[in-house]
Image (cartoon, rainbow over all chains, first blue to last red; front, side, top):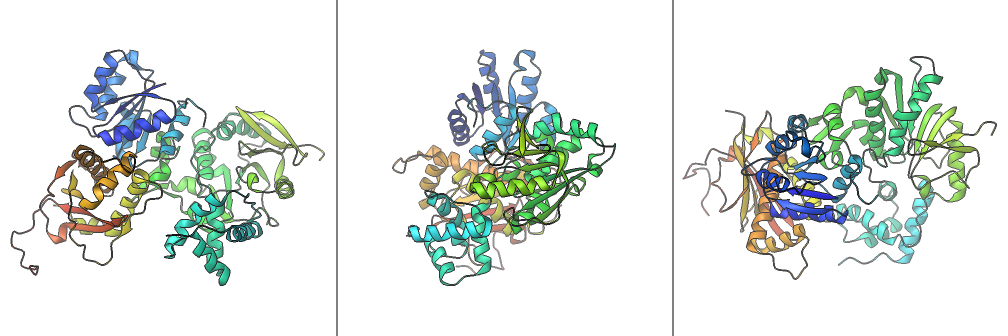
Length: 125
Length: 276
Length: 164
C-alpha cells in the first residue's frame, strides 16, 4: 500500500512516515498541498494521504477539495493529521471530503486504529 | 537510580493482584509490573517500583494497595477495539432481538469490564445511529473492578489522546462536544449507560437479565477454574436467547461446555446452550 | 477587544496540554515536570512560536533551554543517542512542538480562531502581564517555558517591575 505524507514540518513527515512504514506502507513526502498534487498528477496515486491543515502555498483543506474534484483520485483515502482540534474544524474537513481525522498530538497506535477502521491496515494487527 | 523489582517483590505483587481481582500475572511479566506501577511510584516521589512495593509491604495502606491492583488490571481501551463484535451487534444481534422482542421492549446490554467507558459508549453510539428510539429503549450496564474507571465512565469525558484512538471522526462530531481540553459524550447517550463497580471474581450482585454481554479481554487474565466460574455466573444473568462476545483471543471452548459458538458477522458469538 | 488570556486559560490547563504533547511526541515514558513556584524563571535558549488570531489575538511561545534542544530533537525524531541533530532539525522540531501546543491552546479559546505558521528565532516581545499566561516546566532536567501572550506589547519601561 502507498501513502502520501503531507506536512510542512520535516519532523512530522518523518514521524508519520516511519509509523506508516512500520505498518508496511511505501510512503512519499510532500511539504504542502501543491507539492502533493504534483505527485498525484505525476501518476503516483496512493491508497492513503495523511494531510496537515496549516501549510504554506496550499493548505490541507484546499488539497482535500482539489482531490475530491478529480474522479480518478476517488480511491485515495484522505486522513487529516492536524493540530486543528475544534469541533467546527473537524466538521469542516469532513464536509470538504476528508474521510478521517487524527488530532495532533497522536501516538502510533492512534494511526493504527484509524487504518484498521478504514480497512487500510496491510498487516492485521 | 532505581532498583529493579526483586523476585520476592514481584511474587508479592502477583499474590496481591490474584487475591484482590483473581487475575493471574504470569512469571515473566515483571516488565509489565514495572511499567504499570512506575507512574504511581513517581506520583509518590519514590525512585522506583521496588521502593513502592517495599513501602506497601512494610505498612499496608488500603488506598495504595487499591492503586496497585488498579494499575495492573486496567487496560488501555480504544473505541471499536477489534471491530467485529460491534459490526455483529448492528448487523446480526439487534435485528434478531427486534424480531424476538415486543416493539419497544428494552434491550439490555452489559459491558462487563468497561474500563473508562469506550466500549459502553461505542455500543451506545452504534445503536443511537441505527435503531430508532434507541436512546430510550437500550439500557447499557457498564461495570469495572476499578472505582476510578467507573467514575470515568460515568463522567463520559475523554482526553484528546483518547478520542484519537479508533473513534471514527464522523461519530466524534455527531456525539461529542468539546469541554475545555476534553470531549464529552452527549447527555442522551450518557443516560443510556449506568456504571458501577463490580468484581467478576466475587459473587455477583442482582443484575440483568441481559440480551447481550461484552466480556472481552478479561478471561485471559483468569486461571481455568476462575474462567469457568465467571462464565457460569454470566450465564445466570443472561436471557436464554442472549449473545455473549468475548475477546479475539478468548473462547468458552474447553472451559465451559454450556455455550454454543455461533458465527456472527465476521467473528463469533457465544449463546447459552439450551437445556444446560 | 476580548478578555485577556488570564481570564480565558490557566497555567494548569497549559501544563496538562503540554504533558499530552510530550507523552505523544517525545515519548510515552517522558514526563514534563511542572515548574515550582508562581514566578517562572527566564529560560536561556531558542524559542518557537505560532500566532493565534480571533476574538483573542496573541502568540504561543515555546522556549527550550539550549542544553536540552539536541536531546529533545533526538527524542522526537527517534535518532540514536550519539547522533548530533542538525540546526535545521532542531528548529523544525521546536516549530512543530509550538505548532501543536498552539493548536491545542487555540481550541480552548472562545470563538473560532486561526493559527499562523510556526516560526523560530528570538522570542517575540513580551506582552503585558495581565495578558500573559506563562508556565515553566522541565524535561530531563532541562528548563522549558510555554508562554501564551497577547499581541499587545508590554510598556518599554515597566514601572511595576524591580530591575535586576
